[in-house]
Image 1 (cartoon, rainbow, N blue to C red):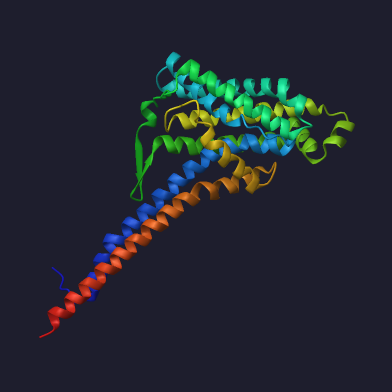
Image 2: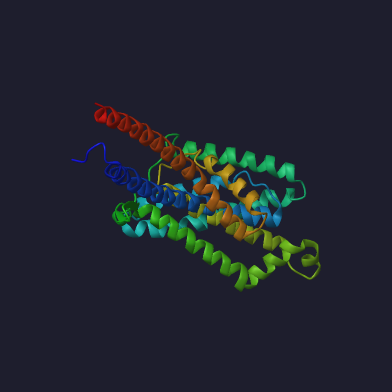
Length: 308
């Protein structure tokens, strides 16, 4: 039993009790922030494309997440088991892309020259979709049960890493890489970049600008549907679930720059990790405060014990 007079023994015990748990806490918060940032990335990539290319404020983008979550739930009802969640990803992408194409071709294309009217119209569409989901599925929400291979966890460096969050990070990285390849290596990516740089000149050279707009809007809505599947793995899907992510997604796009995939990726990293870092800083500050108070108390006890 170390004496209170030996300061080194107390400092070593303090290191064992405080700093090792703080390292694990930091890594845990960093991992949770990365998984949250991956959701923000999937939600913001579609907005980065449509908002950056078409300058359209789509207030119904959050409902594409909701639609993807409900499609994942219905897919798992038809195909339960481990293969169900894999099948739900293309189903949600196609379903959300089809809904986005319907909204763009019937509403946004006619109001593209009036941004304020587009904002109000898409807000009305979001209210209609929310009420439709409430009538069909109820106001309480549905729960997507993850397969067994996503319910486990891994332990690395003293940190527990849930399999579902690792799966979300991997899907976000794959989607980001696939989208970068499409924009940089394909003909449709070349047309998208041309329209983004100069819409009038691209139209003058024979590019069908409306078809490019439709393709980009469908692609962005499909990616949002994928985000809905990932979101369903973490919590229940409700009619209002998209409203919790639409404002952070817009902020991520604005911080990263309109139409910039690299800027959106960097912005989502800071946006996802900053709340976790603030929480970690507050917890570490409180622990340091408790540690300093206990250290001062122990030193006073030591002085009293050494006094005659």
